Image (cartoon, rainbow, N blue to C red; front, side, top):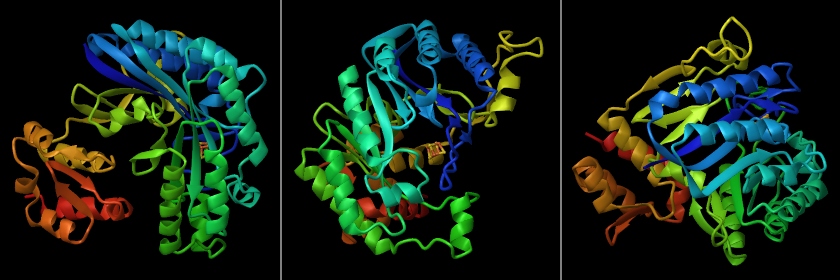
Length: 390
Ligand code: SF4
């Protein structure tokens, strides 16, 4: 049976962070009860379109799904189970959570509902970084949340960390990574702060109110994280992700290896039957599309897809290479040729040798991957390959 990952988007957050351009909305929303009805309708609308599938992972992202009552998350999981022809015995069920906003008993309730992985948006263990990021948790609350998750029985615990923050020194970043690695976690994601168009941060940067660090110091922070995490038993498997043995995220791996995934929820992306699609982004419009005018519980019966396309060969090839080069192991040249009917060198010609000569790409022994230096230049490498594709 064909494997399937399922992504469920919950767009509500306690506060909208000033740097965030995700489809997320701050403050508790009166829309939430209807939104969960719409999610159930969304899942149901795929019943006749999916065919028999084996669900290998379910991931609740956001927003902050960890602010959602366990009973609502459990109801959605039940609906995913009902939709799938099969449920993998090693299915991974995960969610993103804010370390500060979970009430007592919340994490054990999630484990009872079938969750096995939790990802905490810790970002930093330095109070001044947390203040800049407007995070509502303290370093102590973040550490306590990790311990509580382990005590509750979560098999996998991830922390997200951020570097490239204004005022963040190499020493404070070192302390953050070391503190994270000292906790009972098996996965770390490190992301550079990026200034996204339309965010409050972008306006502050334009107005000169916030000064970003130099690219060189951000690169130094990335390299330091890689070094510290390797020393502490975390193997890097993707540009931004490190795991202890057994800790690799099965759900994320599906995205990077061309696996199909059903995306439900406002603004979710999906890839089903060779079609990449995006759902209606605004929660109110999403609800309206899925629940008929007869009121909550009455379903329209159609997926809330805003746009979708079956990628042409060129797009599919570039998407595939872009995602595979995110993986430290890269990809096999034979696998590429079997997928596209041409060798990697035939497709990209002199750009391959150019990137090899520049120390960015390693294409030896039948595998193609970015070098350690190349991991800092993924976008540039992909742009060079795209330009060379005839
Ligand atoms: S908590 Fe996460 S999803 Fe929500 S606004 Fe902040 S960065 Fe965005």
